[in-house]
Amino acid sequence: MRQFEDEPKPVKVGRMYKESVQTPRLIGTSGWKVTARTLLKSRWTRGDPLIIVSPTPLYGLGLIESVLHSYVYPLRTLGFPIHEVLDFEAWKYNGRGFTDFIGQLFHWSLSRCIILSGDVHYASSVRSRLTSKREVLDILQFTSSPSHNMSFSGVWGKLMKMAIWGNARRRVKKTIYRYCDVGFSIRNGGKAIDCPKDAKWQEALRYLEMQGGTIVETENNIGLVTVGDAVIRHSLLQMVRGEMKEIHFEDSEASPV
View 1 (cartoon, one colour):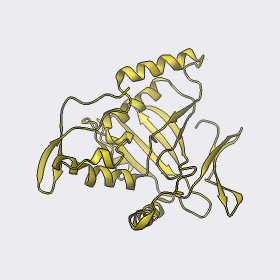
View 2: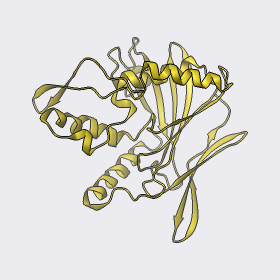
View 3: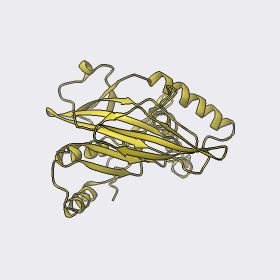
View 4: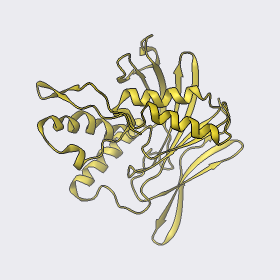
């Protein structure tokens, strides 16, 4: 159900600009139509809460996605088999596709939106407040991965893990403001007031903390989401020396804001 862009995208390699094929929209226009029809046939009605399963997180870990997109992906223009070595399937790699996802959520007028995701070899929880044309939508995304597959092994893995933890520490208790410009590029705004008036959407997002003060878990884990009357909790189940251990992220209010 993907959709590929017709026009090449200029990318910078050193001091030169070369044309490269854009990363695809993970769900294209026809794919969203199929998804919408399937949802309506399930007896769900507009305005109801909705739980969405997205194999690729809508909100990934910025450090990994940004490094791959800004420094590694341009190597494709030099003939390196990037797509065969690394996975570039992230929603933010295609701003138009990311905006299509958000636009569909606004169209459904959700009272609450929870996204469940994985397949990225780390666990995280994200809370986002999106604004578009005076409409507001709150999203909770819970990511758990992997259940049984050690990640970040070897020297490179250890260095990447250290970078992830360092980046994660800087994001604790920090609200990230960003927006989508008229060219469908997703840009960090710095502050809410930095968003231009012609932005297609803007958001304020925050990574939720775990016990211990971090926002990411890279060891094997299985996610457990509990939706109560007052709060929604994302916990991680782990086997430690033969015993089940449960750690959890900070709770979120169950009722829509």
